[in-house]
Length: 193
Image (cartoon, rainbow, N blue to C red; front, side, top):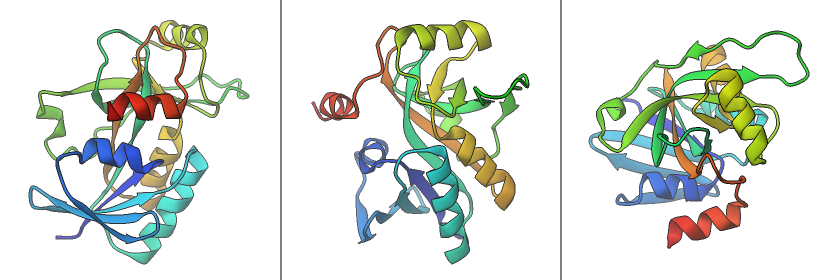
């Protein structure tokens, strides 16, 4: 069986997911792990939707994969969303466009994550800009009935579409709906405590 490719902006996001599992460094920003009979190649790509699409495409040119998993953090837009989420629908918002965004289903491959008791499924909004303020987040929640917000999702789903790969997105909730978006250093301290 071919390995799965895991893409993450930061190593910490992979460490949270694989906290009870060992992974081996292959080279700078590349790791390997084997969990539950699945093999994973992990690439840390840096922040942004362009980065996830570009680095993912480059990795797909080098090796064949079973599918792709995007792992990252997200901000909650409603109180029920906590800890880990599996993205069931994504809404890509281009703030400069006048077109109305449409929710797209994102259930292409799940590997049983949807049955895990600690993982919720939810609707996520992906924008081209970082949503930091509490008021911006509350507006997204009410305007689009979204449950979480993240940045790289739009690039990831374009990568899946263009590469004709299966994949899914797992997000760790870094901020609650009532918070201002945290600085990543604050998030890191909270997770490591």
